[in-house]
Amino acid sequence: MASAIINAIGQTPWGPLVLRRVQNYIHTNNNPCQPKPIPFSESSDLERFRSTSPEFWASDDVTAWLCAVVKAKGIRIEETNAYKLGRCNGKILLNMDEQQFKEMDPNYGHILFAEFRQLIQTQRPVVSAPFTVQNLTTLSQLQPLPNSISQCTPTAATESPLAFDPKPSTSRLSNGDSACNKLPHSSIQLVTSNFFSKIDYSLSLQVENCSEEADEMQGTSTSRRKRSTHTKGNKLWEFIRDALKDPETCPSIVRWEDPKEGVFRIVESEKLARLWGKKKNNAKMTYEKLSRAMRTYYDKQILVPVPKTGLYPKKLVYKFGPGAEEWEKATKVNGLDRNESGISKQEKVQLLHIIK
DNA sequence: CTTCAATTTCCTGATT
DNA sequence: TAATCAGGAAATTGAA
Image (cartoon, rainbow, N blue to C red; front, side, top):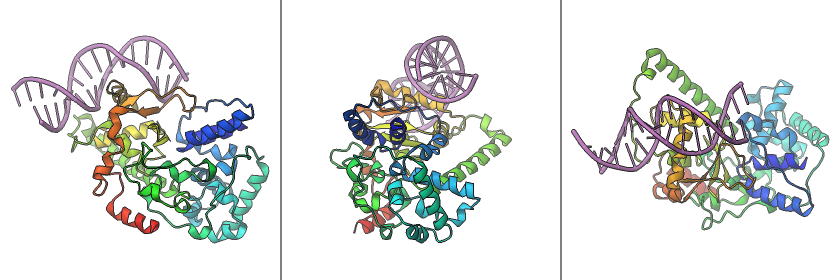
């Protein structure tokens, strides 16, 4: 059971850091820890909530649970307030009473509350000692945040004693945009991922697929690939770095395993390859080819081997190296005018407004 | 036109 | 068995 928790935590973007503390705790109780299994696809994560105590649910897990409930109950998800609920993590749900569920979702709040309580009763509590709920956010503080900041750092998923220190000066991630780090706990801790951005993304992928198919029918995909619009600032590692900052792609397609160490994981390898191919106007890009290009980075130390600590999955995990030292600074330079995936001026204004 | 960096493509074989 | 990793070799692309 403990290993299930470890696995579940480890698969979150903030997992490795939390994991160390959990393992530390477990170690003091003479429990051996096991390396987490290798997830083969994002879909495996959608089942994580079933084997994980709600205390450890990230908003992804809440969303997955929500999807399971509406499916089981035959409820149309559009009729629920999934947007709001999907921004909560498990701890927040645990501290909500029926009235608060109803406030969040007037239509189905009572059902969701009943389902959640039932789930708690059927799940046995596990590790509890080192966890306490601190600074628990009240519902009145649930303010919508701009999409693009919702995943900007793993800080978003952390809180309480397990939260890692998001000091911009020491964090190699720092995002070049310490605005995220400056967000008050109460606002930022709520948001780990956005259900609707995932839906939007899958829709956009469908549109892409349609246009690719259309090209195929016209025979254009078999011709030589078109020139990419701009190669400057279009390197593969920069593309991945940007994808790690973009809520459209992080954590659904790539996600941090340990941002301080520069360790990240590719979640949806073929989707990432498709996006890279799209950027390079190369419809034939595959993960095989993308990963070959990534392996050329080992020579240049843009990527370095992932430490075999057992903290990370063995597959699809990479680590930025000194050759990619600028990876967090690049957006700082462009920060205000920003490229495709940083935070725009407008979003910054919104952010500052939230910060006050 | 040439050079060169950064892939891209294709491949064989190993590992998970 | 499929997906991924590792890396050689040659080709391609786009910028300087």
